[in-house]
Image 1: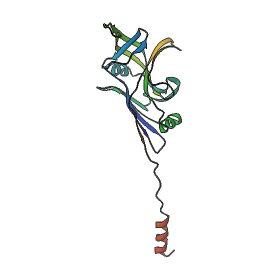
Image 2: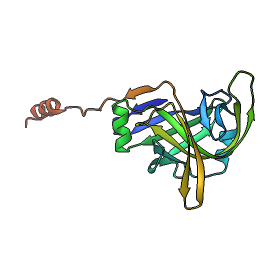
Image 3: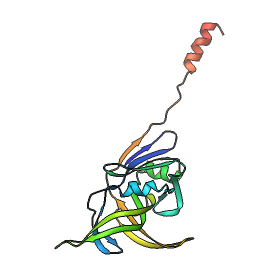
Length: 196
């Protein structure tokens, strides 16, 4: 994750929310404790649905910061995984970025299409073949190394939402405040030259 705090009091954040074709650490899922691997193309297919995907803070649906629907959040799957890019002036995010409190990315998924591969002497391998991408989130106050499944009641009824995070290296860049040049001495010299 790369975080750039800009002089105009905005923050640019980019990085990989999840990497495809790589085995996860052990996670607790509706199928029990497993190792997961998101197959290549899963995020691309989820994004092709055209659903407006919000970026939240710590999976809090009340704290939508940016979203794909208005172009303030860009999500795409490339050869590495799901990449996110956003710029925000949200005060909590700016403050967390300045204080180096942003721990990473996470995402919520539902309608998971998967298969389970039993392995001798190892945790089963859960192949994620399809999802509905519910949201991406910045991890600020929560532990960045977790997985969870929750049942949320929404207008459409109950939905099972699985949350995943990816720990990784964070690179910070803080742009220096640009100072206005002081032209006082130059203005005084010009006045003297003009005889004022």
